[in-house]
Amino acid sequence: MISRRFILISPFVLATLPSCTTSTVNGVTTVTINLTSITAWGEAIANAATLLAPLTGALAPVIAAIAQTAQTDLAAVTASAGGAAVLTFATGSVPAAIESLLADGQTILTDISGLTGTTLNTSVAQTYVTALRTVVSVFGAAIGSASATPEETNMTEAQALTVLLAR
Image (tube, rainbow, N blue to C red; front, side, top):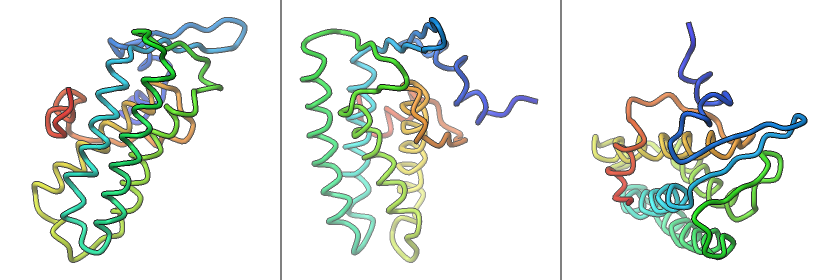
């Protein structure tokens, strides 16, 4: 049986994402990705930080700062695209601005993972966390990031983007 984890990290998933195409020549995999998808994922990460910050107790200023960092990283991605509708890069040389934006989402998940006794235990907060995990997984798989840890969630990308008010 093929697990969702396998599907998220396999090259097959890259080819099935509507906003992403891949090609491999001489062992080098090149990803072409629609800038609107990266923008939506970046907005979702920034919005997740904004939505989660008030629910994280003493960690709120840290999470709120990540929202600002994600906005800055998203602006850097847009600037590096230079007005292009798509970005093309080898999976081994993902642009730094894109890696940084993904890292923002991963940092939020890492920072909140150990929180207990906060309002993060509410169903609304858990919905935000699940949506963020989904976005980080899809984003990481799309860019072929070795640092992305695929998460098995019960939410589709479209649902996650809606929950996190992106698009």
